Length: 267
Image (cartoon, rainbow, N blue to C red; front, side, top):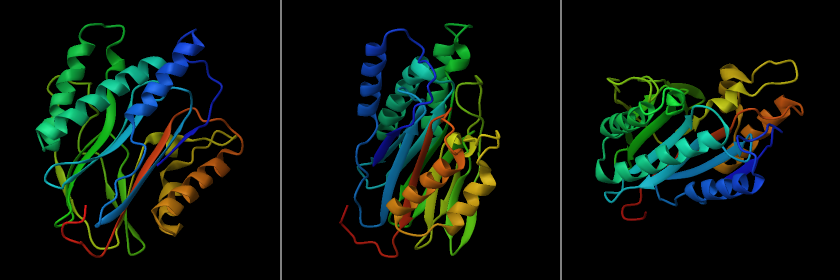
């Protein structure tokens, strides 16, 4: 698990550098330091923040029944307020998935929570929103149920081809009576799953041209190596494309390589 800082030089939303630093340290504690070790896949994550405080979040959560929760998301905005909402969303989902192992119920409850806070302030209501991908994988049959709430499409590399897991619903926090559709996906041996935030594809070069979905998909098809080498190469390509331009949004990606064997009892 690697976390990087790529400062954009933008001023955080506070005048106290010490408070910003402490808030950043707390935020780091929320996110996982290491990827889970299991017999059926290899997982890794990388997050490169545009500032001391970020709005991206991710996690791997193993449930009591052995199922694996995948979470990646991006709250609206940047800076201190985004980090506060990020902590709220992250904590809510982290607790909820242990009580209710159902992506639809978890995301629906999160939406109600965010709308409750949004209604308390017309000035700040739009900050209580986020895109997210929440998936639950059953390692026994390598199937995943998921909700993609307005998030960039997940990518599955299979035998050199790409399969996409597009948004199934609106982002959370925008609508009172939002409907969140659950979808499912069946993984195969040696599949590679990539989930990422929009900072990856929105990164721009000095000419203002974004890295974009096409370049990302081409890179996913082309890049080889294990899960860690893949992330190294992917982030290196994004940095090269920037040509010295600062990041203006957080970049986060998680990758899962599915093994062709499952060793019962080894988790």
